[in-house]
Length: 318
Image (cartoon, rainbow, N blue to C red; front, side, top):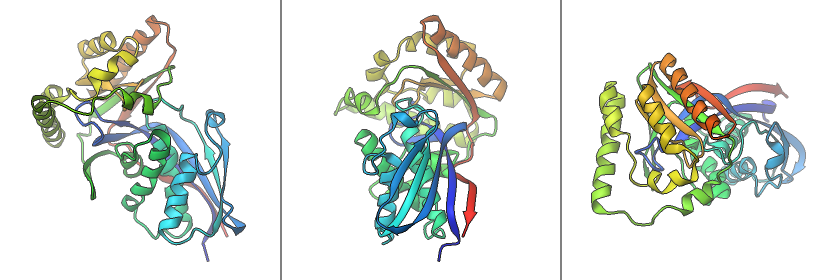
């Protein structure tokens, strides 16, 4: 017998890739995310999705097309409880195609909530593959660089996808991120389509060196090394034309004092890593100004990189 009748979980936004870590790095962002309430219902196998929130009307309601629904279905199948009849209420507070892990937030909150509802038979890290199925339905690729930090919090490294091997990285306490979302929708699937299937050996070596350097920089709080390492040769060069004003905005952010600046996930959001909250706020203002000058409304978020992951925010006991 379940202890709870319903559980509400909150999962944060996230920044993926982090310049030099395409599909293998990401970190959680405080202050924005989705909520999912999962409730046990009478009957069997009639799970349904109800949409609320600012962006709920943009999200598919069919459970086999909705990221939260798909993640929950995958979870129930894995633990042998597919007969359960659940109601999933997705409070969609994040815009789709923002580059801030919108689909991952929904998936993470959903699997965390249903796992807690059923007595937490799996650990948080064991929920990641099911949240990845939500990503698969959203963009055609079951990547973990958004769902891992959304669930676990902080900064995560996906060392391997087969088998899945995810490592949490402790970042400097004064490492902050400025994230600015311009009001332009960029579908992840479209953004992935522009990428080349092959890279040169030279670029692979440089990218590997940057990734290794960035990891060392995080562990040693070496901001100079971090700055030198935040260069992407795989995805960013093919994507910058999809984001209006990107190059001039990045230049302004770096001149203001950002440690590094790049595309958040597949875009169009831009992120910048900064030493200290005050600098992150200054850089956020500069990025916002850059988008405003070219006529794009925008929203800014400033978050410590060591932000918390998915958590329970409400429950109803049986």
